[in-house]
Image (tube, rainbow, N blue to C red; front, side):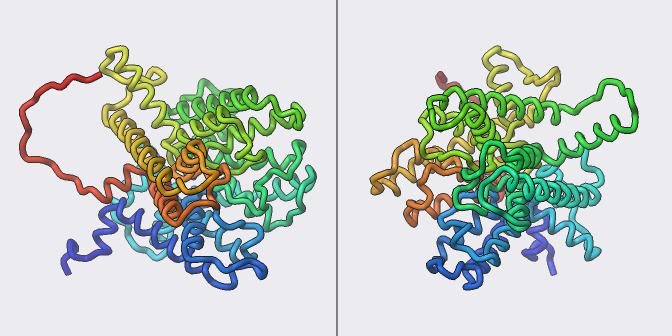
Length: 457
């Protein structure tokens, strides 16, 4: 049989198509399982196909937006299905596909390996892909296990609703995968400011949003420090430096901004206000948990959260958004253009032109997708009496950036609105550039038109 005519071969030779197909299949299977009577709580109303599809998509795309309460409307079996979907979506279906293929002694094409390197690593640091994938799974399970132990004892010590090992495991996986699904109806609002479990959840969110390449480098640096009492200057890669510095700046800047904008709440003590500001600054970058009522925040605070959502986490992580490195590269390119510089430099390093063009394209596609989505939701949800423009913008960005925070609009969405949010979660998780490459085939013109000028600016 001609390999060109074999659909399976075409999927493996075009990783972007494989990525879309595997995520779509996982969503389909998840929807089927959630539609089973065993997934529904005894007192819960029947689950419509659209709500099942919405929940499965939100779980696989590690978003956290829900139209049905995870805590009360799903049975323990249904909650376990959601947990498995979050774990598979967080790690990436292609990771599991390659690991399974290796266990079956099947060869994975070079093109698929190259695609995985682009998704999870820098290419020059992923020579041993099979070993790296095994390390990813092992690191994820270890971190989530330790996180579950910390949450199990931390949340119960700090007060709030009682929880066992299942609840702790659910929150640990959801936090590290930056999913934002909570086993409690009010997310984490019931837990007090002195709850150690909240700090464990924040640590899991940060680790899950750094990216596996950075985590591996941190582990390598840690081993060097342990094995040698005195070491020379550690030569951090540009990737790790940009990720760590930008993540720290976003967390600190977001905390200070939210604390300054929401200090008027006299019902909360100063320590509680500080914890809430720190927690929301961390979780806004695609985790989706909340310790305060998002719908009651002021418009300036919502705008800060929306900026954090748009940036998101870092490449190769479970987080969404346009990514920290993309934002830094895009901002550096804008600054270089303003200054009339030919090169784009970051931390005394020059970025390749291909990287700069990719960053500009990713940001441009994200802006275009969300602008269209905001317009569409304004049209489809205009009949709602409580729908405002700021809530529409917040909902769209939360879906596309796979955050999962909501100002109370998700449950009020129309059928068309739910379908668009499903599409936004899917595109946002896979990346708008990946989807565009899969849909629009590469086409090189065999000729060039004459050059001409237009007035710009």
